[in-house]
Image (cartoon, rainbow, N blue to C red; front, side):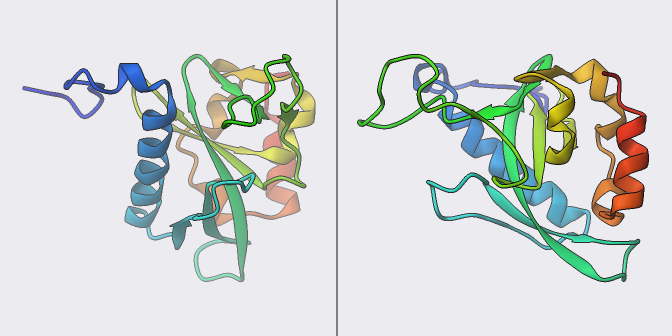
Length: 167
């Protein structure tokens, strides 16, 4: 019998780089958040700095809502805090030319999907300044499957959460 966490049982994914897993994880995140009761949709604009839109609450279910732009990242051991590393036909091969570190100008939330166990790491981008270009998943355990982040998207809750992060 198979497991929910199986990858590439057909042998067709490995030859397509990470793009297939990335797209699969965007849909997986969308479905899981919908299952939890959140309003969420996949962004159709492929050049956007975010992949999904999530309707979060400011102070518990039923409180005023806020639309969050979220970037979905496949992660294994660490969450990458940069974007722009892969590109199309206009891609310049000089390292670092198109890469950038995510800020709140790009999106509000990064959702890391653990490649091995499908846990979701709900990482507010406002915390990115605490780390370089990636952060170990061990350091951000408190955001793993932490739905309270989407139920309490407010300065007080996020500031308290930031204090509990391992730097």
